[in-house]
Amino acid sequence: MSKEVRIDKWLWAARIFKTRTQAAEACKKGRISVNGQSMKASRTVQEGMVVAVRKPPILWSFKVLQCIDKRVGAKLAPDVVENVTSPEQLQILEQSQYVQYSLRDRGAGRPTKKDRREILDFQSDILSDDGFEYGLYADTTETES
Image (tube, rainbow, N blue to C red; front, side, top):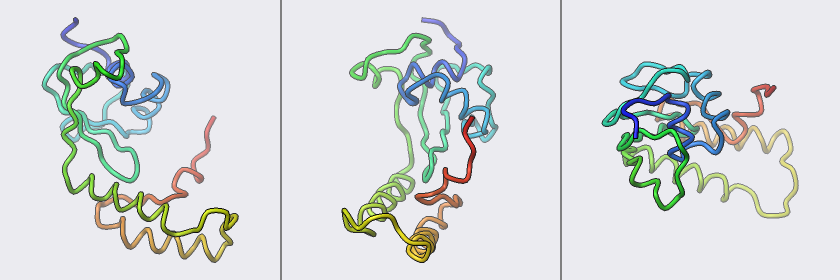
């Protein structure tokens, strides 16, 4: 195994992102950082580094155990990467999942404009403590190419 590998390639190989394109896109948008610095897709990662991945609504932290450039199976992924995300962030994730499933009954249809505003207000009250301003509809404002 190599000692250094591109960060987008490692994120894909360690199964943090489904495709390498998604990993490169996250780097491009500034969602990947090491030691508080945003990383470009071409930057290299070394064993022992802690990589922070911002996937709304939380900030995931992963420790690099092995630098690999070939994708491994799901059973081998724990040998490559260790999840060191703080318990506070995991609690925020649990709360946001609860919010998503508890607000609307199944089959209630699409939320009205008023319903959507109430949902977003409720979510912002819960999720604003972590420094992120993401809700259920956070990705709808971004244009995808």
